[in-house]
Length: 200
Image (cartoon, rainbow, N blue to C red):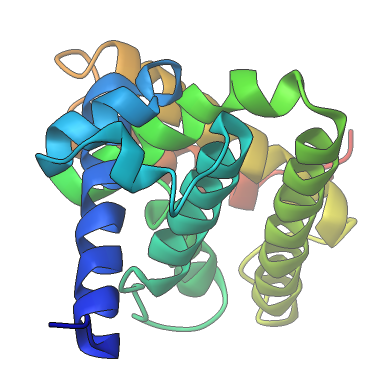
């Protein structure tokens, strides 16, 4: 009996879930056709229909990671500084799903740094994130919640702070549980709001 389009889509969803589980538990270093096949309960031969090479598997995994990151629910509690806080909270590993996503992102840096095309793509993604943060910084400045200064400069500092906190929380979750992550972020934002010249 021939396979239907629905069968193909269902199998592709199964493959996606298997790829995600391997990345979440083993990181990018453990992402192999054999590991995905074992998670799926299938043969590596079956997976070659989807990923003829390891590079194809890595590209698919990165696309899957980006899709899941984009589709994750976002906080929307206000405007100005509240909106900036929401955007930064959305990056932190405060839930099991967010922790998995961040663990995968961080483990993917090695693959990205060793591939010029991926490095360029990652630089673009982080630049886009800074641009979105800059818009929220500018809105908070317009409301008088942040002092004057270059929004792009402030956004770069905020992104750097929160990515550093992500790494700390992933390596030492006992020392950086969700509550402490939020407290540290709030302290950072309070200090940012108290500065007279954020570029000094």
